[in-house]
Length: 404
Image (cartoon, rainbow, N blue to C red; front, top):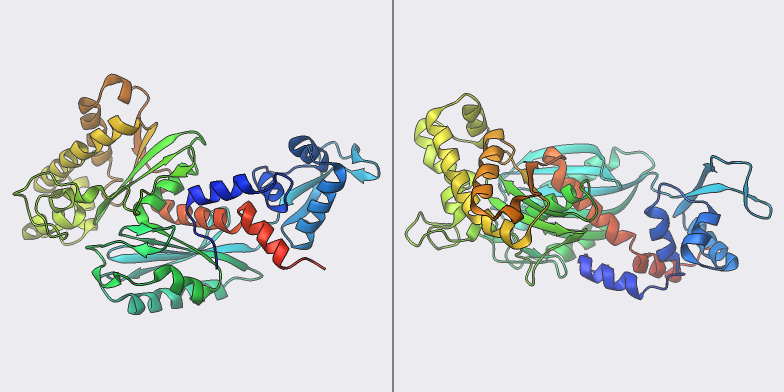
């Protein structure tokens, strides 16, 4: 069975892997745009015999390839060997991503570096039974995969608008997808596609995607503000999931005991006051029926819609300010149809700076996500690749099927 996708598990597995293993060597090559044998000898401290044996194994399993000569093509890294550049063989390897939202899904095929190759959107509510929903998503995924030429599927990433423990694939109690409760999503996806599978909350996937284009040592807080409200935190490449997979579930922080009813059964949660769904209910009498209506009317300066957005931003800032003070992020990244509105970005920036200490805000940058609407898809794609090509997974693959 495929190993869980939890980052801490991968870290422990990598630490336990011999530094001279096939998987560890591939990880080193993956981290570089290209390396010669001499550079790998210097970086690993392996003997020449061991290095060449490990490289031969990676070649035979199609995991690396020779990509021409180094710029100093006439020099030699070993007697009789020119300075050949070795690279991770990512050619034709793809990931299928199912980014499942509350009211629509985005299904795409990406390269292992997160570039979207083909994509389809599906307008569908996730508040249906899992089998019915997934049958549609799987059919679109199959069509997208068969449209490619000479491609190999390495894994599937699934983002959902609810809590999930990605170590176990167990979905938490969710008010946005109650009919999925106890559904064995991870197991079913593995059975259906017969590849590695990663399942994560959509806001955390968005955070991981944005972290992939930020500084490698940055602490990044990402907030998805759309139909619902969710957050994710990545520090130095590590995604915080929490003990039960609910890290970032800020939508159900309660702001008042006598506020509007929330889908969780309580009253006064942030989502009940300020989410896109709450705004649509509030603004329905003035002809606002979808998030695109809010976006358009904010741009047009509609006073009633602008006032509602400003009030929602004020409430969201009240929840985010303590988070910013506690984790001291380098960047607060905003995504989702409402989160990307310039008025929302500016409003959150100003309000949070008013509420936190000077030290907490000194280096803080509040901005729209650099990946736009593709952030979650990129994050899911990268998590799948990290799982499929983890050192332990590569070592197990080679041990299980030695090349002839």
